[in-house]
Amino acid sequence: MAEIVRMPKLSDTMTEGVVAAWHKNVGDVVESGELLAEIETDKATMEFESFQDGVLLHKGIETGDTAPVDSILCILGKKGENIKKLLAKEEKTASTKSASKANDDTTSVQVPATSTEATKQKVPVATTPIIVPIISSNTRVIASPLAKKLADKLGLSLDRIPGSGEGGRVVKRDVENFKMASAAGMPVISQEKFTEVGVSQMRKTIARRLAESKFSAPHFYLSISIDMSNAMQARKAINDQGLYKVSFNDMVVKAAAVALRKHTAVNSSWLEDKIRYNEHVNIGVAVAVEDGLLVPVVRFADSKSFATIGEEVRAFAEKAKAKTLQPSDWEGSTFTISNLGMFGIEDFTAIINPPDACILAVGGISAVPVVKNGEVVPGHVMKVTLSCDHRVVDGATGASFLQEFKNLLENPVLMLV
Image 1 (cartoon, helix red, strand yellow):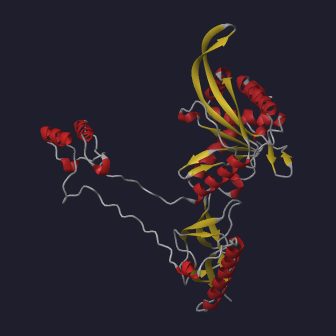
Image 2 (spheres, rainbow, N blue to C red):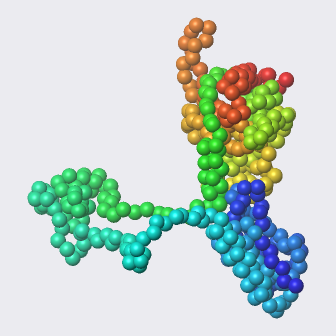
Image 3 (cartoon, rainbow, N blue to C red):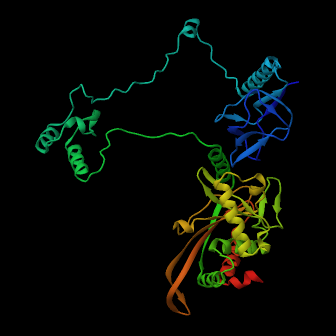
């Protein structure tokens, strides 16, 4: 008997998916556990295996198309089996659900009584205005006398010059700008151009989740400057051993993880009717990819070395760019770090990654003069900003965490104890 295979929900935030590729064609035999298709979710492209045996009788979604979770992905059954009744039943069910939803969403409006004649009057239909270009190859160019005189003097053709005056009229400044651009070898743009691309599943989810976070969680921000001189010396000493390479990001993740052990209020989550204070420390590390941002999780980061943290983060970055991250890679963070220091950003604020209560925005290390022992000396300073959900974390709580974080980076040996 034919069975419907539905679009699977492959992540906790997935509402729709894209069929990136089919590995079977209609008429092919499919065995249980065999690769059926590749599904692009909001975070990765994942392989989808069949859970039953049969022949592929129908594809409900073509390659590159988007469909909601639970819609018909395909139908498997016996060779030659008639599936028209199954499709008709599914279509009827979908129509019933749509009609029911429409009735629920519709609000009744009381309309004042009117005359029969007024009721019969037709509502005028709005039409899209047609924009006719003022200048074309077969029409006279509209230009001011000064523009005409200057163009003639410079030997320029007015029909090549875009007009900025009323109704596309070419004025003196248009001729001057055109001449300057031509002399500098710059392209003269006379037509508005743009490119529109479809929004990816990842970008849709980023937009939805961050909008929910920004407008539902009351954010406040705490910034602090950290003297990174000792951290730089410690990193150099470790890397000079030649056993492995440690980055500043590895040290930041480790320092945050150790600080969170002492400040569980920051390592928490808002769950509407309760607050969860996490005793484990799972650090989400934001990784930029082509379509947006992914946040793989370094689990139990407080118990891991600089080298282990670095290896995991690099492996996650490679998997993220290859779109091979699995749900287990990005679920379960208790705190998030977003580091833009490698891009030359000195400081910034980040939007909290729910359900975490905080996110730490890390800037680059700048060579600046600092005061030590009453004297101005060369120094290296890194600025960080903690975004806090005020429903969970208060100002003093966030400030205490940052003080601990600062102390650990300014005295890296404390992270090894």
